[in-house]
Length: 273
Image (tube, rainbow, N blue to C red; front, side, top):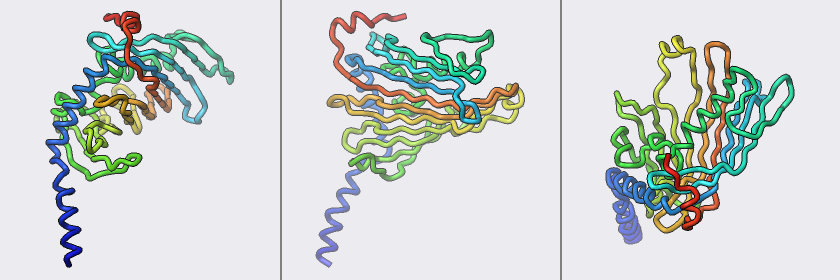
């Protein structure tokens, strides 16, 4: 009995030490906003890989890009260092060496790849290039969601706090998912999302568009004390359009080689548009 009481004495404070949901969200938001400011000193390498596959699994088109990303006064700017493109035509795989390449008058694959790249990972007003409204981490974005504390989940050797989120009814945000949070640093370690709303049948009929299994996954890496940075980003989904265009889309982004910006690199890349 004494041993049981001693165990309870140890366990109960550990349970009570975990902050309430509201406190976790407050610390998460504050750290995200501080991290955004701290990222204005970081230059890094970004590799992107976007693939469009036919429904039979064969490659239709793909692009690989390598960027150097540097901070600006209000966001970030990218310098394209390397580009590789491939597309399939007439049973052959052909290559090209620059973005915006079109091999025919109506090149839906090319337009889709360019649109995905610009809309999802080339936000110049963001420190990391990702659209801010994809993930409910800052105070402003949290206002559009409801949250639930879902226990913990192991990430490496860390027992991360798990929070589930859904868009508030009547709102414009389509994403639901979960965020795994470091229990001491209160920084996101992994964010996964899914499309929480179905495309209305009327929209499918009117525009002839259907999307299957759309969602995103982002992992974060500790770059410096108090500074965590998105390290990997990925999405995979199926797209079908009324006139017979069907593609399975995958996008992968990796950020590496984080380093403090020197005066030379800041001058070279800091060009607000």
